[in-house]
Length: 406
Image 1 (cartoon, rainbow, N blue to C red):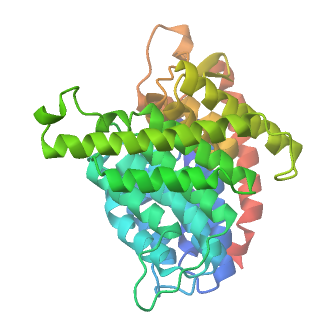
Image 2 (cartoon, helix red, strand yellow):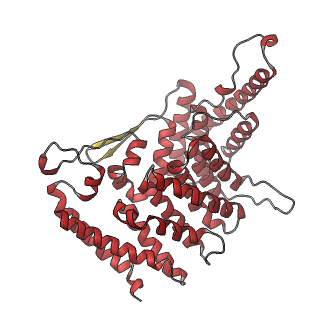
Image 3 (tube, helix red, strand yellow):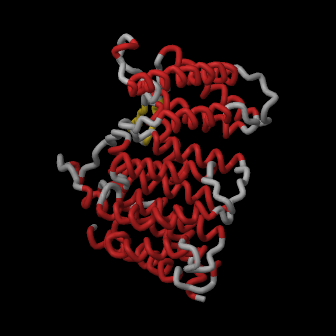
């Protein structure tokens, strides 16, 4: 059985090696197809064996597609390369490799996003920045830096030669979603009253926009802001005015102002939870909006956060907070059809959601497999199925990388 698994790994790695080599080709369409093959492989399976051998090469080839001037990369290639970096980060989990990805990628992503060129590339880059920070970032300061980079995509720092460009609704949605995803990981926040007042005011203004996905993204962001207690952090101790320091007085004034903003948001949320239509058109979007904002109203009025129970095979993945829900939805969207495979086998994601799938044992013995063993083995009853599936995957990938032989 070990030999058979080694053969399967060899075949899979051989295909990925060909795709990796193709990233050096001059023809952009060839590089795009190679990246698509890599993304398909990393989405559908945990490619630990390949990563152990080719981690650095894959990372720097993908970065070469993003770094300005290193290649004449199309918008599609840059989007694919950034998605591949995100998948690579989730595959390695919390490790020195994830740290290297973060350190090597943040600056080129920042430079590209602030260049404001080719906006069609930006959504994938936003997701990539959020993922590498989520996994490989260390501490509050680095997370805040990435959140600031995201925010500046729709709120650029205007200079004398910079012209403000109105961001599109899909871009606003992508920025706010990625920003909320990172915010959901934070608890010890810097108390900058002006920044938070501006953020809440801006998100409140988005609730009045015509585009429903924008409203939904803004509503989720506001829910996370209030769940992690941004406003309460500005509340000074109950003292007489004469006993309060100037700093405490300033905090109290900020708290009062933010409470006023919260009151406005509550009114907006209640209206959106019962909207009869008129703004937007899709019925599904309207129902999603109503359901979301009803949950937010219940959270504001009763303190209840939405609870999600998702069946994964014979197990159940559960969330019970806005922060967890934001993380789950973001990662499901990023992984697409590969989410189930990853949550079943990716120990990093299992730790994120405290998900403990039923352990599989070899030969029915009470032996708990290590992560290394789990990469090489399945239960005896599933070995043939796995080999057959991987053979089909091999045949499919061979057809997709046929261009490599040209």
